[in-house]
Image: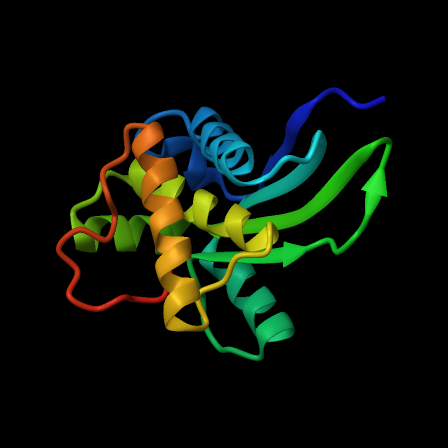
Length: 165
């Protein structure tokens, strides 16, 4: 039987993540676990997170979404996969330069922006989306609530229109 809760496998293949403002691993783990705990009753699950760079995520974005250029985060659901008693949620990939650029442009601390992107992507892996107005409102409300529990201010405060995360 697997240990209860969310197991986060974290890999880094871009050196700059180590220089981000503060330790990255506890931020990623706390955000992923908070999102998981807030919206699911799964007993045990596993999530893989890759901290990479703009070049790598741009390649993935082209290959899997047919979109050119980097994006801040990609989520790849695992479907109904189970391994060792754990539900495999999927993979999350985050791009260093884009995360830093967006945080700087909005005046949000990098750790807070990273928390938001991790929460956002875990919600996607758990079946939430923002394709329609009502779905977007529900997902945004859940993000705000989860982030508040982590001490992260509302990332949407002051935005006149919703922007794609």
